[in-house]
Length: 316
Image (cartoon, rainbow, N blue to C red):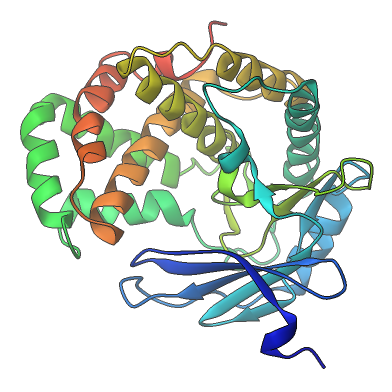
């Protein structure tokens, strides 16, 4: 039995939403643990066996959608073979290794494999609407929350003005409400750099682990695409404000989309990318509080809304 003395804590960080602990285990594996914090409404969902089957079917020797080893109302955890997420290794002042382009290629291909599985038509309530856009929609409508949530809501609404504000509401509502005839899939949910973990040993299989299960949803496949592409767009726009050029982010976006394959709606992904960035702004205000980063979202979101999100994506 493993005791506290046998564990090496590699990293710990926390917001009002959840706490994360990354621990090295004696067997050489890495334990990723999320614990619910008091500012998050509701609890973590139970793990549906249907979902683990979907993750297994969508995985390949390069990418594993890692199902949790613990799925409790206040804790989710995974045991994998990596300690560094893509969020921590992508840096504007460091070269991007060719292996990262390969990672994005494989991620695009395997996310498509997840989306191409039959939707949960026989169990229409098995998976919720995407949680990120749902959280944003509630905040846009009510303006309530902890820390800087209410103040930032007032500031953002004032700076955007009525037209942009209604456009943001419309983008979010549209993402959450597919038409009856539209294609929907079981989504990974919150498909972001922080959940994409590189293997410590680049020679093992798989080379990338996707921490999965906690935010699974049903909706338009473009929602998952927008969540990753919008995050990369936020990185690019934030560094541009600092006078830093980071062109490889466009290359990563293009590589991911090329290997995901055709059939996705560009306008919807563009709008969804705006929703993703706005959700991150909300989460920062609500679960961390005031900071200089919040003020950067004001011109960023205004410019994105003025272009219907087109500038979030690489040139077609």
